[in-house]
Amino acid sequence: MAKKTMKQAIISGDLSVTIESNIPIPEPAADEVVIRAVYSGINPIDWKGANAELSKALHGDVENPDHGPVGKDFAGYVYAVGSEAYQFHVGDRVMAVNHSTGFAEYSVGKSFSTAVIPKHVSFEEAATFGLPYLTAALLMFKGKPLPTPWNPAPGLTRTPLLVYGASSAVGAFAVKLAKLANIHPIIAIAGASSGSIEKELNSDLGDVLLDYRQDRAKLLQNIKHIADDIHYAADAIGSPETAAFCAQAVNPTDSTVTSSVGDPWDNTVKDRSPLGVEFHLAFSPGVFEPNDPEGPEGKNSPNLGPKAFATIAMAYLSCALQRRLIQPHPYEVQPEGLGSLSRSLTELKEGKSRGLRYVLEIAASSGFAKVGE
Ligand SMILES: NC(=O)c1ccc[n+]([C@@H]2O[C@H](COP(=O)([O-])OP(=O)(O)OC[C@H]3O[C@@H](n4cnc5c(N)ncnc54)[C@H](OP(=O)(O)O)[C@@H]3O)[C@@H](O)[C@H]2O)c1
Image (cartoon, rainbow, N blue to C red; front, side):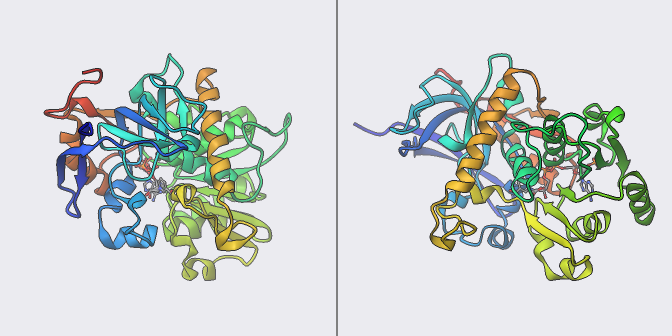
């Protein structure tokens, strides 16, 4: 029997988008589900990954099909279940993070990076979580041990935390997770889009919002004045400048700066920073690597650590949504489905999308079947 086929979007280096037809619908490996995508989210990595040079810098092995530049997160209905993806059933409403197949009618979700969507959460709301949520969880909880939402700090414990870029999707989810972990005071650094994150902060517990657009020396002084004992900074922007700034803001003797982009590993940042500051990278693609280079047997370690981490973070997301403990990121639905993808990517690249996520309805793409057809 002929295999069922689907349409999928391919992004070129110039960010033009081609729709390919007659692509076989993927079949799930043992630990995967295949999802009939309803909404997909667009991330900065989608334009960065389309650029060959940037993609190589970010992923190393660009020949690995898992690193293809075609969409990282989506929400929809489970269509097929792998033999060992026990927790999912055909027809379940789910959201998933993957590393390659999100801009297609059918996408693959790994069992450890897929989560059930509670009934009261819409697909477009669910599509705002995905990659930035998982990255925020890594940013917060993969480096130095901090209290977690599933093992929060007791009572009025003081754990000052700096979140740089708190109005970005990654930064906003870091603030939301910090709050659920009872981490306070949160010193959130944001700009014009700070409205939605301001609502998450609790001034009674010492949380503050500071504007990054002020004079840098003054900003640093303000942070130190509020808390001179910060040992952890989550840098959601991850530029050399923001990482270096965070390194100046934390305690110089025993602190960690975790960033969402790899530049801080650059020695120029390390060399400018106090010796007692460690740098970490929160790298979601690591969750999908076959091996865990940081594992006990080095490069040959089974990759259980990152996969187990993702399992916990995604299961917690379902639980927190079900109990209305975590809100989606502000979002804007793009009008023509994948027909809006090229423009959306360009706007993201040019920094025109501020404080919200672009999401698109796959079936709104010209010539695509409605879900259920
Ligand atoms: N390592 C990983 O696995 C991973 C995964 C996801 C994302 N990332 C990276 O993490 C970064 C954030 O991604 P995202 O999806 O969260 O982005 P996003 O939601 O598109 O972030 C946009 C917001 O970032 C804020 N911003 C931009 N430049 C800033 C600066 N210099 N200082 C402070 N805030 C700044 C702006 O806030 P205002 O409007 O308030 O000024 C802007 O609205 C990107 O570089 C992305 O590539 C990495």
